[in-house]
Image (cartoon, rainbow, N blue to C red):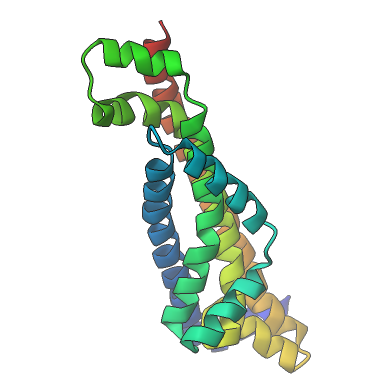
Length: 220
C-alpha cells in the first residue's frame, strides 16, 4: 500500500493528466451517445415506422454481444489512433444500451394514453414530449446509466490506440510486470465508475418519480 501512495506522490501531475484524458473521452462519447441514441430511438418509433423500430431493437439486441475491444479495433483500422478515434469507438459502443432501452420504453407506452392525449387536441410532437417521453423515463435513464458504466470502464481499453487515459497507466504496469502501477490505474477507474453510477442512480430515482407521476395523469 505504501508503494501505491508513493507512486501517486511522485507522479501526481502525470496521474491527473491521465485522469483528465480518461474523463474527457468518457464524457464526450457518452454525451454524444445520449443525444444521437435518443434521436434514433424516437425516429424509429414514430407512427408508421414500427417495423423499422422492431428491426432496430433486434439489431441492437444482437449488437450488445459484440465485445468492446472489437469495436475499438474496427474503428482503429479505419480511422487510426488517438483521442478522436477513441471517442468515436466509445460513442458507437455506448449507443447500444441507450437506443435499445429508449426504443423499448417508447414502444411500450400504452396506446390508450396516447389516444387520451390526442383526444385533448395534442399534436404528435406534444404527445411525444408530454406523454411518451415521461412514461419512458425509467427505461431511458436505465439505458443512459448502463451506457455510462460500460463506457467509463471500457475507456481504459482506448489507451491501446493511443488515446491516453487511466488505461495508459494500467498498460504500463502490465508491460513492466509492476502490480503497484496496475493498481494505480485500476483503482481510480473503479472508484470513478462507482461514483458515476451512484450519482446517476440518485438522478434516475428522482427523475423517474416525476416522470411516472406525469404518466399516471394520462392513465386516469
